[in-house]
Length: 166
Image 1: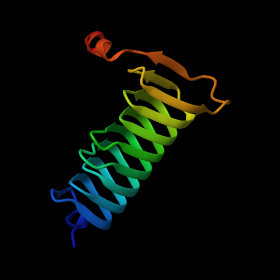
Image 2 (image 1 turned 90 degrees about the vertical axis):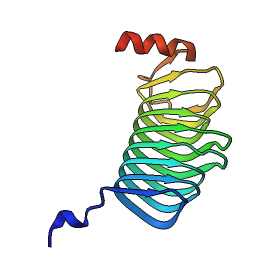
Image 3 (image 1 turned 180 degrees about the vertical axis):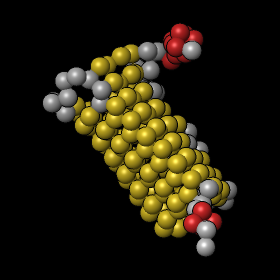
């Protein structure tokens, strides 16, 4: 039997997902999600619900009407854009992250971009934090992290930053 025949390249769930585990190269879930484990190279969640463990290279979370609760997120790059329902993450481990209308209990990251209506209870590790809005709240910083660079770039300035870097 061919080993590659059993490898999942892509899974699309357009009417929600309620199961224990989904593991695939590309995972897209639209609608309500209730899962213990979601693993994929690219993971896109467009809806609310609950995920116990989320792992991937590129993770995109966007709850539309209902909130999305994630207990543990381990992603290389994570983008969370809350709508009417915010995103709630207990523990977030990511190299780069962008958070909008997202609430994080513990944040471990190299670089975080925090936007409007985002709150972080504890920053356990971060090398660079960029605030894009004054409506961001960090409750506690771990004291041994003295090398963190904090920057404020208002949302209006982001287009000029992209032009300079591009």
